[in-house]
Length: 189
Image (cartoon, rainbow, N blue to C red; front, side, top):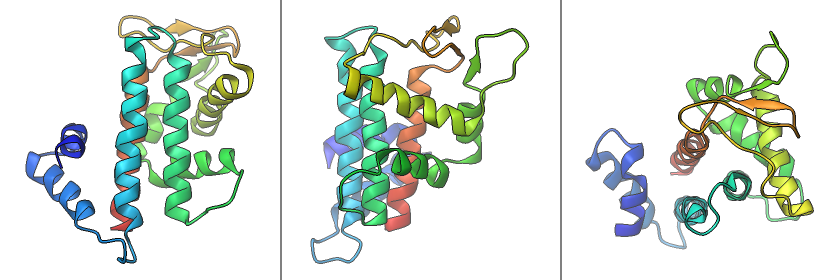
């Protein structure tokens, strides 16, 4: 249970809640109708941990991390839905963010990016999700993993392609994805 518990601990109000969550998943047998919850719990930890490890050998290349976070959200949405086919990646990433995020996490994404033009409002939730997916596509299909930067904890980051200002830190996006995954797993439990 240790690798799972260490990963999820910071996303619950108490150690007991985190332990109960992990234990409920780990106790699921392959024959259980909701066994997919265990797979989802494991996949979340695996894919997000890869995103967490990337800065050790590719610092400042945040699109690589976004790729794994988008992969995680897609994978969790497909597992939750029972989809085993090919394709529909954008659909499932959008479905993940629409179905498994809290109102406050949706608001954080809604206000996390704005067009790089004076006096324009933030881009909103749907466009923020599409932006994250487009960053993923830029890495996967174009090999571009250096073209986007998130708020660095001190200041917003101006990006030129797409022409947006990132007001949100990547770690916030990461935690939003993890909380969404937890909600999806709990739904299956």
